[in-house]
Image (tube, rainbow, N blue to C red; front, side, top):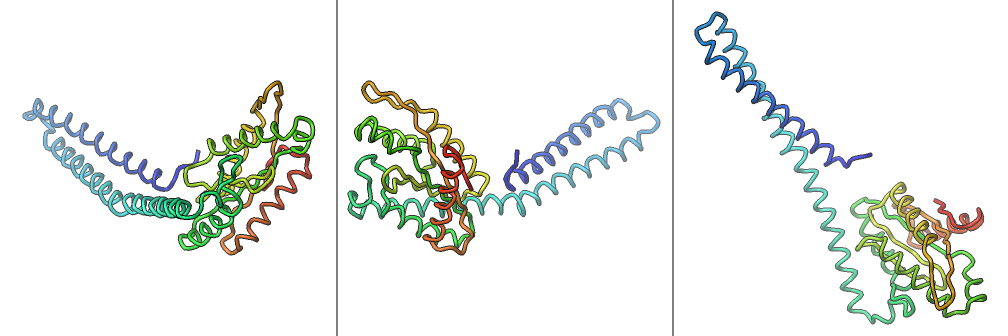
Length: 263
């Protein structure tokens, strides 16, 4: 399990505090014992040892203070600022969505954001994350053999499948992720501040969740799978180049047999 830098720093801080506490307890015990041995031989050595313990306690506490002020606090402040920027960016996108015509930005079948919203949001995220030098993940999903669903069971059942998949994507993504239906049976997720490992884990969870769904429409009960292509922005690509790279990975997943993630 990998910890964030601020978490590791916090654990070190707690360790130092605990060590100082143990030394203090030990010093207290020595003080109690010394009251009984005050007139016994060797008391001067005991007092000197006690002074050493108290000095060590002071050093540990001073170390903890310096560590907390000059390392932990700046790390926490940096993280808070990044989260604040991310939240502000999300609020800006939400406000923009409300000011524009909702119908022009929403897929009428699933209630998700549509391709137009996705294109604009992706460009804005890349512009903002270039400035703060943080990763942006992109996930392109395409339902496997969806045409057969429509041909065999009709478009009404196909619509139920699309709605079920869209609800699954909404449930499994974060509030600041952009989740959109690009058209037909193709969906996309923009996952800001997510590197390749985290993006792969999220994509696998989504793929398994979709494969595990049982979609019921009338007397029809069917399973559906999805192929997923992933890409993490390299900091230089345009939005179109970034999208094409993820789309190439989606094609690779289809080529390798579907119901898989490629990155």
